[in-house]
Length: 153
Image (cartoon, rainbow, N blue to C red; front, top):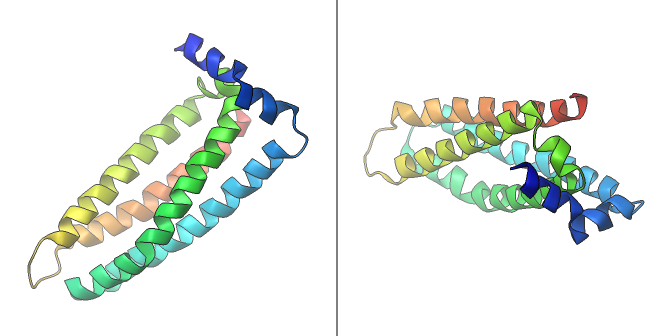
């Protein structure tokens, strides 16, 4: 694993990011702004799910905001990669970074579970949607907190 991280850190994109006076800071700003927008979209969807009485309203709220959240998630992944590459050997062994990856995977699994639950036919609003909404809010906040903690270890 260390060899792979060292290879990433020695790559041309990593060198460009390290040598540029503005690319790394710009990636950091983009990452934070995308995180804010992403969490706002996720929170709006989750609060709508928490207060929804029927599946049609829940599906509509999620359908309207899902594309925005997806785009912002991709922007976060790309800007996060730009932040990771120049320090891959250090960050790759950081326990908060590793916990963050686990939290992201868990949050994305929760999204998949939510999508499956929203597609199921039925007139009633399943309790799993509320559980998923609360889990989503908590998990994405944990992801943001862990991301911030990476800088301190």
